[in-house]
Length: 121
Image 1 (tube, one colour):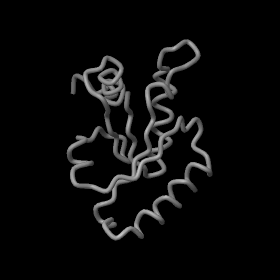
Image 2 (spheres, one colour):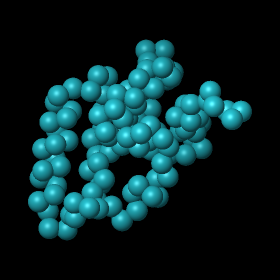
Image 3 (cartoon, rainbow, N blue to C red):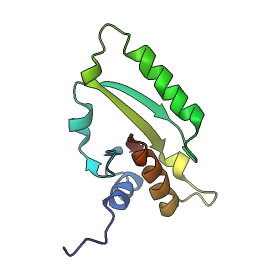
């Protein structure tokens, strides 16, 4: 109850910025996820970009990649994890620092589309 006003996504972003971790993952509900739970023994399909904004081209790329990926013999649909990756360099504003509001806005948009978001250094 004491930390209800704290956004865990911003704390996670700080962990990546300060090199305490290489990456953080948010589920479609916007909650932090353990990378080991999301990635272990999974077939990973990732698209990296700035997603400022998310465009129809981004969605088409991931959908076409998904359709091709699931045709592979060794890929099981039940073990497939789609990730939208944003790197710190994609988040840096003209000043060279990360705009936290912009970060939250991008994460919110991707999560509202039902996507899992990976932030990496």
